[in-house]
Length: 323
Image (cartoon, rainbow, N blue to C red; front, side, top):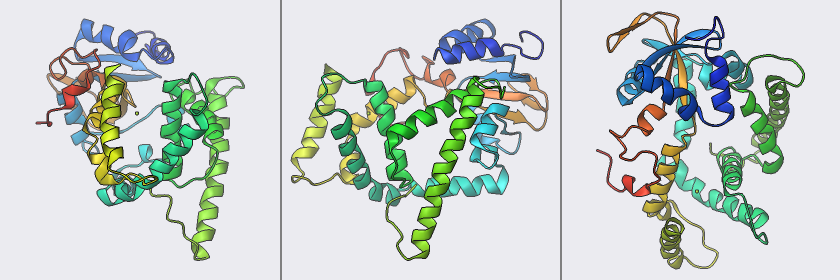
């Protein structure tokens, strides 16, 4: 479990900073100990679990055997009223608000706004440039869509994106609030974001009270060639200047395969922390009450049992319906 108190936290942080959590932290320990192993992270004894069976077990026993329990730095930066800290009815209420925006009705209304955001991003960031960073551009575009199409916030994404990245850098950093540390910089960035969001909430509230409510704000060779063909087929059915519809998006089968394969190889989150609220017996192991449980996406995404040749990029693996 590593050194006293800090355990293997240093190794965890190093792997995280280099964006090699699976290769440098999880994979060596899985090979040595198996899919279930214990360690100590950020001062807490932690059991790391991997695989579809483990993920299903702990997710389906939320609030029964485990509750969400993120590191101190994450809680302080995300806020004690964020969904990651809510439990029971309050958690279900917030989750319901979020998921209600992502229903077919919500997504149908959102497609047109997303098209506008994408068009503006390409015009402002791609036009006239001989070279672009596809990785950064994709992150920026996703962030812009969330701000403009999901939340209806009309602010400069370029400025806010840098501030948001500073917050993310501190989410899993040591909670040392000393000038110059990642955590200190992240707290300052969070304050900047809070000021902007509070201003937007007040503006929208005033608009609603004044009868001026806005419709906006309802809560990514052969590969490229295939995507272009699919998109051109849809474009040929549209009039000049006509935006996409939700039905058009549903026709983008290969596009969705690419998106799913991208998220499999580079998942948006590496996993999630939980805390055992009672002693848990799982696959012959006992996880004591109070210990942290860390489930990972890698344990499933990189498993040959589910994805043959898991480290290769192969969108067509998602061509067949999920059984």
